[in-house]
Image (cartoon, rainbow, N blue to C red; front, side):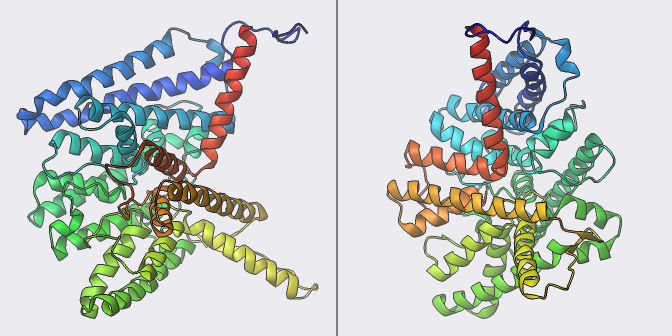
Length: 504
């Protein structure tokens, strides 16, 4: 074999089928991403005075769509149409789609002169990953940009790939769809499942909008708040978040939307089919409400002890904050998290780690993994000390069925938790090098990695590029559940090296 040339017998005539297949899927997705960027222009019907912001959405939208079109159709490869993506190549597609979305949706903030490039990338990452940390003061901010933020959370919450799968139907959808942490099937077929989830998700959002309007909320606030609540994103049109409204009705509606958003989509589908027993016996349902009750009572008692308030008022504050943090929404009804006692901060960090249900819009490690890991630990002790003559069958309740939990599931859950904790430690260390106290570093990076969006104040508009980049990386890792990011980067790097070798 000559240096830099492929082995004899391996015919090479242009980009490999793998590269072209990835390019085809990503470019098709990018066209839809670009088209969706124009949706905030609908605000101009009611706010024509903001028409000067229109070019800041139209220009990046057209650029993304034109470049994607050229990539898709100018270097067509017939082999790529039938090429089956591997799991790692599907991960590369998912990673690229999210990066394109983040860059495209950051452009309006930069073009409008509202944020610098790094700040804008942070804001769009926070929006698409439904984290909800923000660098802007939403009070008095242009409505078109506020709607843009909420729409980012709407599509980011249900998943960019899921939205695209419901539009782009081809034989590569399944693996790409799975890499975005969608593993449960509502209906036969990936496209049918994606569309069913999107319909349920959108219907809940519309009901939430109507409910907010009935409480007297401004229609624009109702739309943006409902979109951010069901996506468990947490972007608000007011700097005081939900506390701005000081309304039990608004808080109650928000709690319901957050709970629905952090519930597995398959369970919501079962609810619609009136299979209540299947929902109630599901392993995550009991665990989630158990965590909510215990955490709410504990924090309510701590509120009463430290702030000298009545237990009922403490219970109201605690319930909202617990559900907001566990669901990774990030809405708040308290002035600041930085003033809370360390004991409350510790409970909230634990909730950020745990997260809510798998297959939902919530962030964090997810209850399912924690339960599987804990049961695996218990089963291990049981097998070690329960007697060698006994045979154990490991079963759990899933969606109304008693199913076997495999060793692979236990091992995968344990590996993910260990990886998650290691990334958390690295992020905390970098934040501490940037001047954060240990409590600030732990709270804020747990919020980034768990896509929660509450903060101690360390991450703000005055934060430097290092803090913002580390926070953005943490948010993306948390949203894509770590493995697809590293797998995607590995595949892309390998393809780049391979193309460079062919080019020598």
